[in-house]
Length: 205
Figure (cartoon, rainbow, N blue to C red):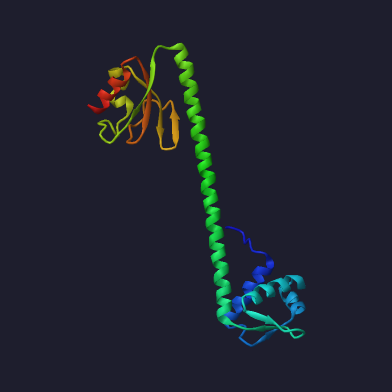
C-alpha cells in the first residue's frame, strides 16, 4: 500500500472539509481557535495555522480575530477536496509514468547487453571459422510455426544450427533443440555459405 505523502497540515484541512460536507460542522458555526484545535489533533498551533490558511484560501472557512474560526461554505469544502483528489491522481499518474520509464530503461539495457554478447560471439567466431552467421525472420507464412527445431530436423536438412533468437525485447542465446518457431521471432543461425537459402527453403517452401 502506498504511504500517505500529504503533509500533516493538509490532512487536517481535508479532515475539517470532510466534516463540513458530512454535516458534523455547519455553515455559520464557529470552531475552536488554533490552540484548542492543536490539542484536538495533537499537533502544534503552527500546523493548525497552515491548515486553516489552506481552507481560507478557498473560502471554506474564515478566521475571526480572537474568537476562533467560522465555517463559510459547503460547496467550497467540496471544491477543496475535489482539487486535492485531482492533485493526488495527477501525482499517482506521474509516478506510474516514471515507473514505466525505469522499466523501459532496464529493458533497453538488457537488450544492449544481449546484443553485445552476440556481437562478441560473432567476432570471435568469424576469426576462427569459415561458417556464416545469418538472421532469418519468422513470418506468418512460415510453415514450421509451432514446431520444434528437432521436429523439422533443421541441422540434418540444412547444416544450420540455431545459436540464438530474438523475441520482442529479449534475446535468448543457445535455445537448444526444444526451441519452438514463433511468428515474429528472428532466429540467428550458423552454417556454410548456402545456409540462408537452405533454411529459408526448408521453413517457407
